[in-house]
Image (cartoon, rainbow, N blue to C red; front, side, top):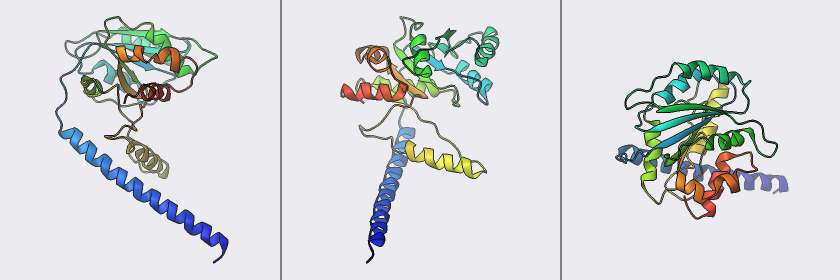
Length: 250
């Protein structure tokens, strides 16, 4: 048997094994989602600070802002953070928030914008987050981080903070879910992203996704995330994941 054919068979076998493992993980993830949907949500909603780093204006930006301003959560503040005042999102946010009036039981009790500037030692997004942390109220018990290009349901914040009612849970996270569109590119993106989403589940190998993650203020400080993991990095979620795993948490 030619050597190249043997190599081909070996690679094909490895690919088949990887595919079976991925299929198994997919079914495990499906079962995990179904159990989670059936479970009752913890009645846990401490004061929270929601920090949203922004750069430019994404498609649907206005609808996203509205989804944040109408979250069904009793006590939270909202902080938008940008690198530069010249960013077009700054003017858009200023106009949008000027007319904001808090509603009873829905939306943030206060909204701020922070201009964080540029740092030569870390990524722009991480620097924006660090700039916003300086404006977090001392009353906040939970820090929530969200990207500015996701679509949020009205119960997103409650769902994200709820798992922190369990003292054993250090970080709660969500993950984006792309729906396939009519084009090959959108279908490929959906398939690729879903393969990553299904890695999450009821095990200790999870990771935090920066587009939607929450952590208690006390744990954030205890782990020294800002000083030890975000001081010189380009990745917010990888740094937070390292901090939690390094302390033996999940």
